[in-house]
Image 1: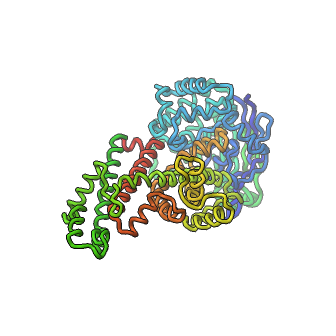
Image 2: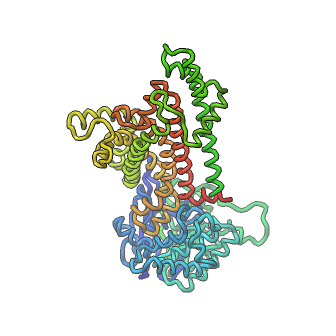
Image 3: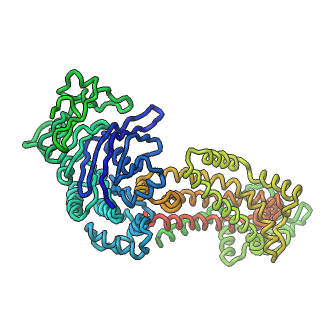
Length: 321
Length: 316
């Protein structure tokens, strides 16, 4: 039961004793079944808040504005019970750290049976058979034995495969992978990316991949949104973003990716300055304080989203269509 | 797991020996020798010498301890100075009453305390959570003998719902159960508070762990997350607490049995200490220590059973 996803004007703030933290501001994203969407940005840019909001897992002190329409339903307006019914059925999440993602005192098989709890039509034996088949599909040999293992008996890469299998077992229309390779070493990362690329061939739902790793995004995604300080500053097809970035932040971010250097450098390039405060976000463009091209309106007027092509847009005063 | 069990049992036996050595030391430090106490001030020297020889008090202390353990292994814990009945018989008569009291109190405390702790976590920040918190601290603060005396006044004297003293008619389960209500409640009350606090604290910690988020991301109902995914981990510190606390449960049984004039180990020890009936004190302490040590070992093994990570540490 897969359908399109569209977040519009989505804002999330966390109420804390030190004031509201505006973690996400007027974010617009959309995704269609069969598409793999990348969300990229540095730490603290709001990408985790965005996927947490999409998965309806925001903590109690979060306040949400705007809408998240999935398959014609506004997820932001659903009550807690209906949200729970969607999780693990329509929406599945693969978390960041496979080392801590599973319960340490229950076997893998036990947990994966529980995770299929929405499938009332299946018996326990049928659920176990599905697990064994799915573990085989994500490249785990000896699935029957692995189901009887406890999480700590599996390596990190294997656990991330299990996490992916767990998500796929629920046949989700929306699969969210939040930094799926961040906690893995380089070899494991390559293997997991390879696995995800293979799986997307016969998966028809929406996949959202979050990463701060530009290479991961480039390899996996059709379209990508670049986030900075709680805003989406640029979005478009992977080719367009990587070869014709228009927003100064995207350009600076790409310039810092070591994978793109032709020769060895003594000092890695960085973007000067620091992230703006999310408690009191700047009035104008969020990137203005660090932007090399800043001019008059940048510090006072929030830039509009400028449409460049059908699906390429950037939020910048200096960009014109 | 087997090596672990053997190690724990060996350590337990060592503790038993050390406790008995300490007991012997205590007996020798207390003024007045046991024979004089037993025979009274007007006993003839010959009679005293006879008794000293019979009790083995003329032997070196280390030999007395060795003899004590050798006899204990054959089930002989010595004889009551007053009635000359075997201590093992006295202990076996009193022990079931105390064990039933202690275990009932513990079961009640767990059955109420654990769900209260879970409820507190599921309703964290609400009035229910705050009320459980206040109630827990309140019942922890009240000593069990105070609860015993006031419940005695209220339910036995004023309302006449429950018997004031004794352990009920032998063979009549209903009357025994009725006699158990107040003493068990007196001991359990504080423990409900302890257990609820403990479960809440470790539960709060576990509920913040990433695997709970995973379970939530799959839409598992909250009661299942709490009762299966969190409680299995959060209960581990509570098991340790209860195992250690069983010592204090048995010692509060001493007061509670005194208040309700309920036959049991507690009453046996208080009577024996006040009459300097050393063989009875020794035998009872040995049995109680053995019970305490075995419960601690059982708790450790149970924890290893519940947590596969502990199990693997000791497998290697």
